[in-house]
Amino acid sequence: MEKIAVMGFGVVGSGVVELCDKNSASIRRRAGTDIEVKYILDLRDFPESSYAGMVIHDFETILNDPEISVVAEVMGGMEPAFTYSKRLLSAGKSVVTSNKELVAGKGAELLRLAKENNVNYLFEASVGGGIPIIRPLHMCLAANEISEIAGILNGTTNFILTKMIRESMPFSEALSLAQSLGYAERDPTADVEGADACRKICILASLVYGRHVYPQEVHTEGITRVSLCDVQYAEDWGGVIKLIGRARQLPDGRLFAMVSPAFISHESQLSSVDDVFNGILVRGDATGDVVFYGKGAGKLPTASAVVGDIIDCVKAEGTICSLCWADSAADTVCDWRQAPAVFYLCCRGRKAKAAASALFGELRFLHRAEAPEEECAFITPERTEAQLEEAKKQLEKEGVELCSAIRVLDY
Ligand code: HSE
Image (cartoon, rainbow, N blue to C red; front, side, top):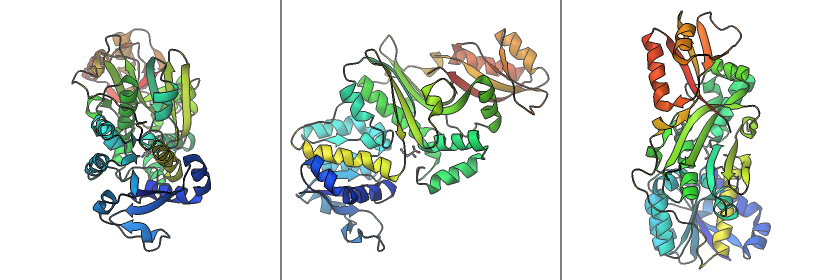
C-alpha cells in the first residue's frame, strides 16, 4: 500500500482524489499496489466533502510523515508551491504537478534537485491537460531531431474563440462560461493574455531543446483584441483564428518562441481543434508531423495526467524517470523581431487601400459582409516582424487607422 498526499483541493486536486478513489482497482493493477490518499492539504475546510477527514492545514505533517513518498502538488502559482516542492524533493519525496507556472519558471532547478535526491519530479499535467505529451516527447520521440513544435495550448481561449466563431458569442459571455466549467485560471488574465500558453510552450521547448526557456523571453500576445470582424475575415481567407504557441530551433542553435493569435487554414489539422480541446503538432525528422489531441483543461482530464504520474513514481521508486534540462543563458531565445512573418491587417481610412498597395505592392484583399466602405483587410507579403512593425507605423502616419493585425501561419 502506497500512501500519498495531495496539496491543493481545487478543481484539479479534487479530481485527483476522486480518480484515485473511483479507479482504485485499475490503478492497483497498473501500479502493482494500492494507492491511497492520506492527506489533502488546503487552507480551507470542506465539511460537506466525503474526504473532509483527510484535510489538513499544516504542510509539515506531510513533510515529516515517512509513510508519504509521493506528493501531488496541484496548488498552482509560484509560492508556496515552489518552497514546498523544494523541501519535499530535498526530503527524498517524489513530486508530481500540474503547476505550469512553477515548471516554466523553476523547472531546471526542481529537476536538478530531484536528480540530486534520487527522486522524481513529473509534470505531465502541466501541458495539454489530459493529453499525453511530456512523456511521448522525452521517450517515444526521443530518437528525432524536432525542428518545430506548435500548438493550441490553452483550453479557455480555444473555448472562447470557438464560441465566437460558431455562435458569434461575445467574448465576456464565453469567458464566464469557461470559468463556470472550471477551465480558466483563478485569474483568467493568464488565459486571455496568453501567459498560460506561454508557460506551456516554454515547458515544451525546454524539454525538446534541453535548455530552460523562460516565459519572460517569449513574445506573447493574447486574444483580447480579436474581434468578430477578424473572425469573418479569417473565414473569407479560408481558415479560423487560433491562439498558437510555437517554438523552433534556428540553424545557429538559438531558439525562436512566440505565442500569438493566428490565422490557421481550414486545411491544417489544428484548425479543427475546437472548444476546450488542445492540439499539439510536433515536427520530427524521422516521424514527420505528429499531432496530439485531447481535452486541455478541466477536472478529470488534468487529474488523469496527475494520477498517471503518481503511478509512475510508485512504480519507479528508487530510480529516476524524470528528465533534466539545463539552465540557460540570456541569449538562448533569439530576438523575435528578426523572425519572418506574414500578417492579416485590417485598416480603416479613405486612403487605406491605396496606402497599403503603395507600401506592399500587389495584395490579396479580404471581404466580409457589412464592412464599412473605408475598411480594407488584406494579407501582407512575408517580411521580418521588425519590417512589418515599421510598415504598420507608416500606414498610421498616412492617416490610416489600424484596427487589427494577426499573424498568418502555415501549420
Ligand atoms: N486555464 C488552463 C486552460 C487550464 O484553459 O488551458 C489548463 O492548463
